[in-house]
Structure formats: structure tokens, C-alpha cells
Length: 291
View (tube, rainbow, N blue to C red):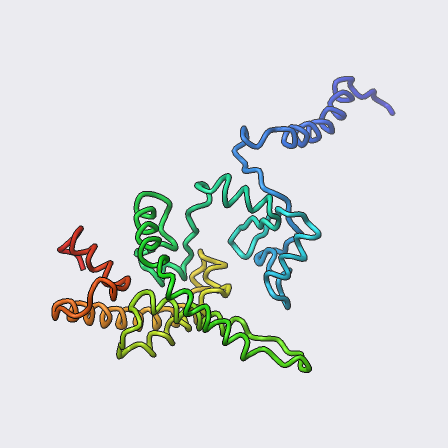
């Protein structure tokens, strides 16, 4: 070479090569608490936009999650569209979430479809953890969940329905538990809420409950992409939910009106009280001006 390279340039080249390595190492060694990044468990490989949905394609969701947990461990991070979820698949991991850190996980996330269902009246299921939730839980525990006779009767009907649907020993075919359990939940819920007395909208109420229980378990496009207006427009789920909600409100108004008329006529006694009677009594006691 005609001219010698300056010494400071020779020292600068390796320094420039080392700087990226130092930055990378510092990021890896920095505790998540100081960087503001949550410590999340690892997960399987994901695709752009849809995340880990392809791992559930063509399989029953809980079985696909079981297979993933066997390969990835009892605690893994999954992304379904825009929604991030941590899946716990072992007794120890479930105990940490449901018992040790229960207050941190007590509030359920409310997606676009749930907002259409409840529209600000979350009830016990989606109410945030707090005093209102405790009061709702107390009412349900004392009045709804204590109906032991209702549970026993409906459980007997459930077992008989399962036995009648089961194939003979010589025939091997699956039993559709989804249909049977949906009918069981609908029957027991209606009996606990409005009792077993005759009600002119009882059949419509049972059918509506069954439709609602069938709709809730699925993964809807708006819930997977809550920030997308296009997902809300192309999905048929919002219209179905709005229709079911209108029917539910009509049936609820009819039930409340019949209970008020029966109460005004002096019919029934304390033993015949159902959940609607209890709630109407609490409304009269706590907030007479509310509906």
C-alpha cells in the first residue's frame, strides 16, 4: 500500500464490531423488572397475523393444547390472532393461578362478543373482582347454588339421558355430550331461576338457553381480532348475539311481570320462592326506584 492506515482507524474497526455484541448481551442480562418487560413463558413457533391458531387447526382445541403442553411444558405462551394467552397444563401451574395468585386472575377479560351480550351489565361471570362481585357471589351462593334438590333432580335426568344415548356393548360410537350437557345446564338454570311452576314461555326460554350455551364456547373472529372493524363486519356472530339478547330480554320481562303479578295476588309462600323472587325482594329492599 502507498499510504499507511492510521492507527486509530485500525482500533475503530474491532470496536465497531464489538458494540453490537455488547448491546445484545446487556439486553439478555437485564432483569425484566428493570426493563418493564413482563417475564412470559416460551411458546411454540407462530405465524404472522394468526399467531398460534394453526396449531389448533383440524383438531379438538383441548386435545391440541394437551399435545402442545407435552412438547412445550406445563406453562406456555400462545397468541390467537391479537389475543395473548398463557396456558397452564399441570396441577402445580393451575394451583399457582387458581389458588396462590387467585386475586390477580379473578377478573375475566371481556371481549367484543361478551360486550354485546351484557352491554355494561357483566353480572357474576364478567364482573371485575371487588365489592360488587363479592355481593353477587354471595347472592348466588345463598340462593341459586344452594338449590340442592334442583341439582339432584337435573343430575338424575342428565345421567338417564347419557345412559339412553350410550351405544350397546356390541356397538361402538361416540356420545354427543355437548348436546346433553347443554340441555342439562339449560334445564337446571331455568328451574333455579323461575322454579318448576308453569310458565307460558318456558319452552322458548329453554331453547334460548341451549342456543346461548352452544354459541359461547366457540372462537369468534371479532374476539380473536378485537381491534379490527372488518372482523366485526364479516362475522355472523354479532347478529346472532343481538337476536338472542333481544329474545332473552323479552323473556326476562315476561318472567318478572308474572312474578310481580303472583306476588301482588298473594300466591305462593317462602318455600316456593325462586331466584327471581329473591332478586325482586332485594331490589325492593335496597333500591325501590330501580328496575
